[in-house]
Amino acid sequence: MSHSFRLLFAATLTLASAIAFAAPAATKPLSASQQRMSDCSKQATGKKGDERKAFMSSCLKGSSAAPAKMTQQEKMKKCNADAGKQSLKGDARKAFMSTCLKG
Image 1 (cartoon, rainbow, N blue to C red):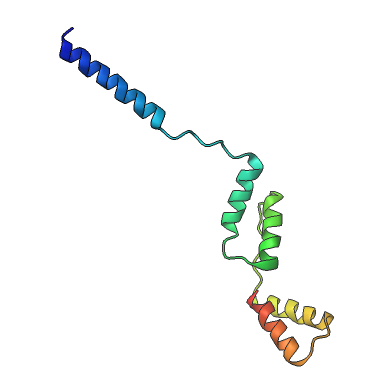
Image 2 (image 1 turned 180 degrees about the horizontal axis):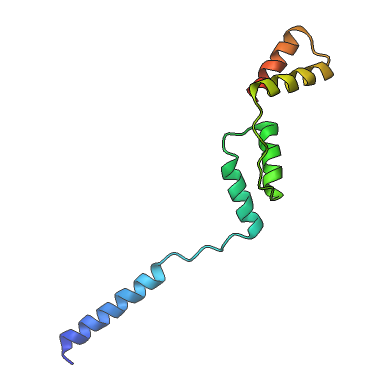
């Protein structure tokens, strides 16, 4: 073997070794429950408060069917009933209804 060939071969091995050791270590794979939490969290984007809690609960339990989104009429009925249970009147009721309907 010629001297230049051996030098080129040695340089190639050195470079290959450096690349192999410089590669980032593989991250530990997520457990099944961690993966489910991640997936559910991504699907819950945009949901807030009780709606998010209910969605996450059903999603994490493995429910394939997410709770159906309430129509505006259903929201109005539920919020109105909740305001009645709390005996809200006047401005307090208006503020509660506004917040509740925004969901």
